[in-house]
Length: 283
Image (tube, rainbow, N blue to C red; front, side):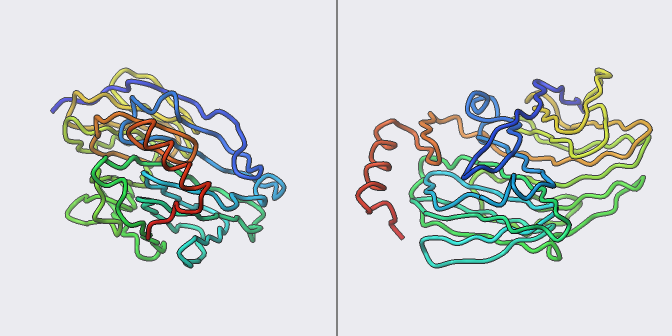
């Protein structure tokens, strides 16, 4: 078995999105070709309500999936189809925008004062960019958690590990999304088929993510190369928690305009023209 190497290491860049939500962008537009089929990862983590309560008011999406994973706090959402709901700590919302949706995501003041969550975007293949939109809203209690050898715990949001399948299913890129916690002084090996794009994002602690001896710390995203069969993680004197995400690359052209991602500039032009005319929503 060959251990995958870390191809790229990036640190989150502070920015604001929506109506003024403070967050750190782990990767985005410039790095998207290397992360195919993933487009963006944002980490919003603040104990100051002034930095998150303005939220993400009504905005459109087409051609992508948006995935929100909340570790702390509360977010209310609503959309142009009349759906509404709330996600709280440990919950996941996996939204397939498809042909088009207009929605809002509005954080509420956290019981602890702190909000902490992640949103990443996954691209849709050309053949599925105009499918009807849908949600998979997953409550924390329905996410299976495996206890592995050595005290390793893995929450399986999407994908399969040890014969256990996560609750998010029927997605084009066959994604794997795991929340992994390792004790100190542990070596964990995670199988990963060749050709799959994979990255890790450190939530806490520090660890080595290949056999080079390089140590990575929290708020770092690590993109693995495509040449091996597994990812090897080594912890030292502290516990480590990280998100692990993998998916099949699409290898298709990307035309990206704000919240809409299509394959051509003409498709983008049509999408924004329809949004202005009020004909954006197809379902």
